[in-house]
Image (cartoon, rainbow, N blue to C red; front, top):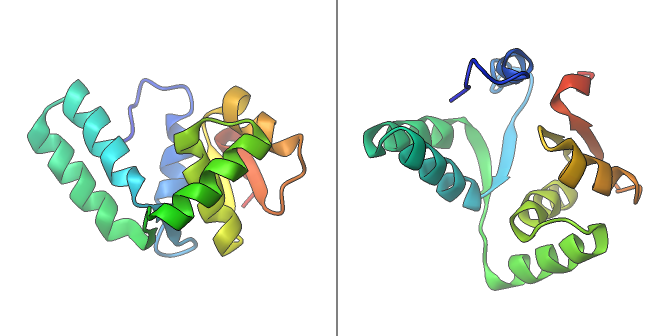
Length: 129
């Protein structure tokens, strides 16, 4: 779900519209909890379920959040000085050698970029592809 009131909603919509044609999504499974929780708290549970189902159909690979993956993610998060949940997204990108696009410039993109990660990372407004 894209909130039209957010400053970068057009940028996000442009990227999302290309999923399945130009891009495939590889995400940690926690994404379903984050989306359904946020939509459920801010809108309602029916909409949350619909959004989660739509999201599930867009994801090519879900990285299971098992103990080994979570441990590696936690260590990666500590190395890059990012939040625990964010480390799951970063570890997924590292494991699959993919690109990360995020809205969180200050606490995610900039902290990762400064350490020269083995992947590309962009703020949504700077996504070059």
